[in-house]
Image (cartoon, rainbow, N blue to C red):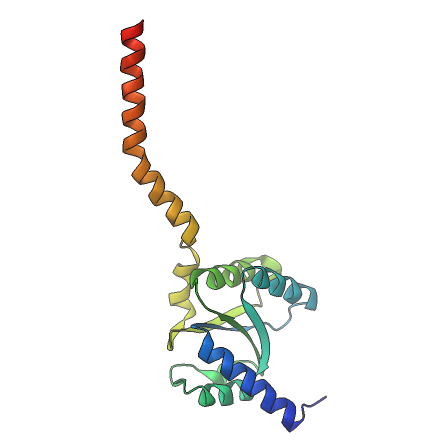
Length: 168
């Protein structure tokens, strides 16, 4: 069933608003993926505060124009008729990691990330793949805290060992 003009205008307005509010956008091709798997991806992304929408290629192009985003670097001609679009703001690694991990599962090998927009600049999947391997912000903070804590804990153990040696 085709969309009415009013429905298309609503979709374009909604996507243009999301494009202006979010600083991360990932485009994905998802042909031959079951509905259940797409629902699971949406659930995983929603748990992290990330939105996933399926949008027709033409409507997405109109939304890019409305949001005043330069799409010259995006090869939309090779994109499928409908694209999966991931919208996120804040943590730039979480959406890339989640989508990349979903695409790496053997049953989902027809799910392909075409690229993304980060702060208005298009990045190809080849440049996005290393971002998926970066640790999350919380993991990096915990590693930093561990590194800062290590010299102090070694000092405490050394002082305790000296105290135990003198008391024995």
